[in-house]
Length: 263
Length: 223
Image 1 (cartoon, each protein chain N blue to C red):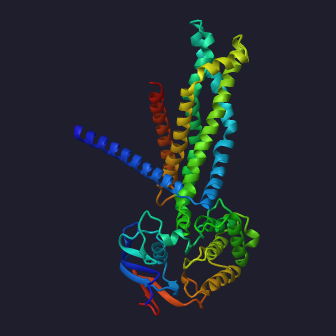
Image 2 (cartoon, chains in turn red, green; image 1 turned 120 degrees about the vertical axis):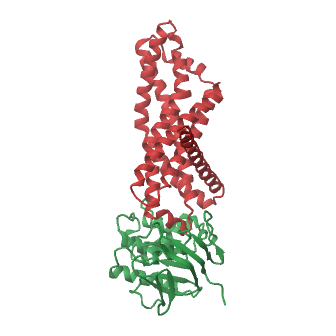
């Protein structure tokens, strides 16, 4: 019995490392392909990346705005309840800023991007592979890695960065609105307190989380989409795996980055 | 004797179910040859084309394209330069791009033409194929038959040296046959261009017959 348990655990660990290895290989191919692009190829890649940014960032703005506003307000309400018990309400904007900028902003944007665009990327890649479109591109002289994957990575990084900036700003504004309803705080005071709370570490965290999330989500989702082999029934399985794995990667990467920067 | 444009050396290809489609197949395709491939359903015509295009990987043996072996995971230089005219049954066009963008994409990506020149050349070939009015539409709108003809136009626009043309899904109407004949005849004007056309009873003037079946490939009269 213990032997079987150990075998099963070992197989899972081996499988997890195998998947990590194949994603690293794909990332390596993307970087290699991306750096070798000619001028016209770079133009093609940028055109596709622009479309990706439109779908991932621009079309997600209303949802991002709505989520951020609610989350900022609710977080402030919760924090306010705790702080007012100790008479420390004046620290409210610092705590809100640190919570939103360090953790909630990038994480929520990551979840939004996975649910909207990551699943779409996995479905698209799986469909293209099954229909033979990728084979036709490859045989026609268009390497699918630099032509399809690199623009998605580029679009992912730019979109996540743009959405995190919007999300953080709106969430902080939402927090201010709730604070303003309950406390005698001015916008100038709120901004001043924010300025004190946001330092280079917050900016570093935002930058690295955007870079990692923006790369990891398209990479994992397209990678799982490309794993389908023969049947359309594999597509929903690939999409489920892609979203679950990219969510896990997001949480682990977020925790590691926070520990590295703040511990 | 000139080097063949394509050579299969002791190639074994198994179907996903494990059945041998080809076993120890040796076959050479001379440069400038024109073949009409014939074979029953499941006889291996499409599989042979996929092997030759580097899309299907043989389980044993190797495929030499323009003298260099096709290696798994590496984009063969012949393919990278856009010299292969690959025309699958459904055309293999990207559904999110217009016909014009589909034809222009390999010209820009593989042959580094700027967008204007690539689209000019692409439109010229689409117009010759009778698809000028549909050039700004996506493949899902015109349907498979037009996608297949557009795929021929793509192969022509690139100046392909080796054409691997599968039979179109769903057959052809008269306009499509005329368009396909025109494109293939113009491609065939260059004696260095090699063409393998699966089916193609509608173009008897193309060249010799190639019989594919029982895991073997015979040119001329058949086994």
